[in-house]
Image (cartoon, rainbow, N blue to C red):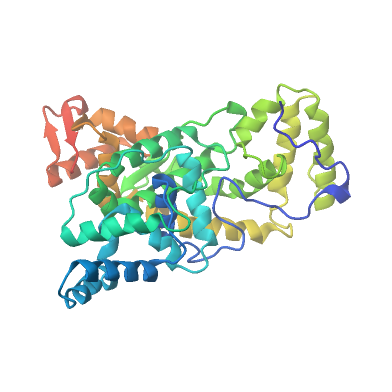
Length: 442
């Protein structure tokens, strides 16, 4: 069965003059600086991964319930103000357990962009959720707050409610697998998860964005694979001889970002609305099984071209993939320099860079912009890559990085070993990578 909608436009009047995008990526054309609140995004991810949701009353109602519970158990009424100041005014409430971050999703206004970013993580999670309750060391006060919190979940819209999960197939299955694996690893260590949760989501937001951009034009090749994307450590120099860093780092990724909106909006327009969206590469696989779709796609390409007033030459072909390529070329062409929509995609790409990629991009003067990893993200990625093992050979660690889309050249690899030696989590059996072992820091 083809994934194409049966009512593809056949006349110019049928073609929408808008490019709609509601799948696979969180940025919209109206988004700008400060579009995303990462605290709120944490709450959305917890809701999906823990399969829990809050009653509608929010944190003020919860605080009142806690106050009533403490008054009922304690004779000293002066104890509650201390609890209130410590946990509700000093934000220590959110350090008890990850589930308390659900309140973060309620506290911010203008939550739509945050919900969209949360949906991107739902796409990576698919049907994954924490089925086992991890062991958390809590003091007496925290135990009472946690108990009351779990009771609060059963009020109104509660844990019995099915939390909405992904309404789209994973665009990057290899990254979805790693995301689920890494979140499972962190979920077994709740206190560590709380300390790195925001960085973890920022890391995977960047990995998803960069790998989506680098893979999106290779839709003919089937299921995506990790593309080489080269980084340096933030204390390294980005000299001209760092060929891999310059040729397979920031520049190709940045140039590929401009394809995200044209490709994904066209992909969405080809499919039946309100169904589970499929990646472009899956759509391509489906049309190859139905030669008659070539005519549908060619016809749509012609009327799309006329509606947009584009001058791009089209070649009619009996190959459905050729018709699909024509539509994608037209979708990109409508944002070309000189076209009325040009500035829309320029702003869109700028928003992607500043809002989703900013933590991993640095300007290095004459060397230009490069992709970087600072020490905090490097330690996090190292712990995730080693996972449930105690240690990993350095060469195997590098392969684990690369499987997630993070590449380092030989010079950076040497800098990595020196960094691990400085923080004391390396065992060197010899000078070769085969005999250097890296330990987790937790």
